[in-house]
Length: 416
Image (cartoon, rainbow, N blue to C red; front, side, top):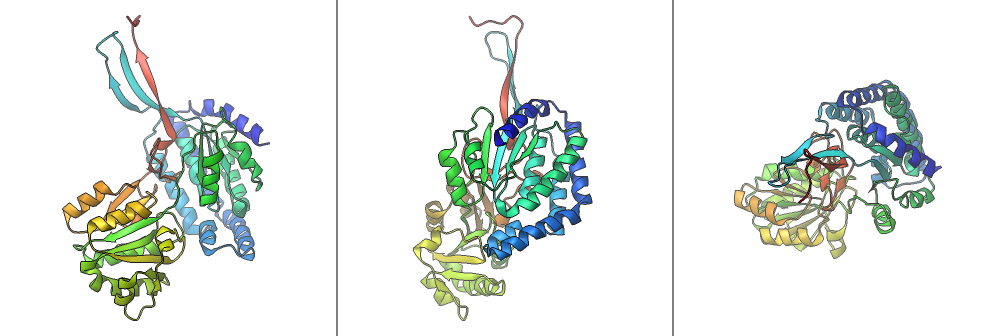
């Protein structure tokens, strides 16, 4: 069954690649309208998944990822509307030049990758974000969601496919592997020549399995072990606002902060204030000895070596006092996952050094790590966040789902 669906997607991909911008945008508009029209049905099917997950006692972080609310559905629609307004990446000219020999002109343009398979867990919004980004970028897509979101995914993808095909999407361009059997993943990752790119989104176990066993190119991220450094020149009010948002706004996602580093010169003022804020936001704090002393009446667990290496996916944060900017950078480059790291500083030189020396997909200056997001960046959602360096890095929108083609024009030109 999986092979047949992939073959169908492969056939559809050549037709999808030829659709013009207006047709693709009309398809996206139809999808947004269908989601708006079917909100109650979407929430009903998601509630089935949520009840099953609660009975199975899945972790709170997974429940948060699985949950759909009316506002989260509205966010899906807003992302699609944003994507409609975005420039079509297909056919865009990247560069043009005229070699000095052979009397030819050369230009490089963006073209679709072809067929993209996305393997993901828990988050049903990924089904919609992925489908619409692939449509915009002219790619057919294979969706393999997790068992915990099966009802939500089936319902959402049916709504998307029905609306999209009625508006002109080639049949077969969106495929859903509607089985919880992990054997389907093993089958997918072996279909070299039919699938052009694999994107695993989920826990370490899933990502490592796909990266280790796939014979198809894989684009993925590892941990989202993000840091926030409070420099000695930081504006304290600004630092508290950013720290709380980075950790507490949505703790289960990959761009939430896990470790807070505080310069010793501001620790005495900042630590008691931020610990109180975290306590009021029901966040468990783990700290080094200096943090335990400075926190006052707030209970602090002792941070162990494993804590600096842990992506909590929960309302838990580790805090460490550092002696310098360079000690903070060394800690981040040792323990970080190269996802998103941030500095709060009023010193332009310190911010510049941090920006240059922290080797991450996104580096934030006086901004929450939660802002490393496709919707925030104006991409109309994201298909994932890559911590690799080829061929895309950081949050990935439609443009990152393309490759390039050289167009060479001559007039009887030959190589001498």
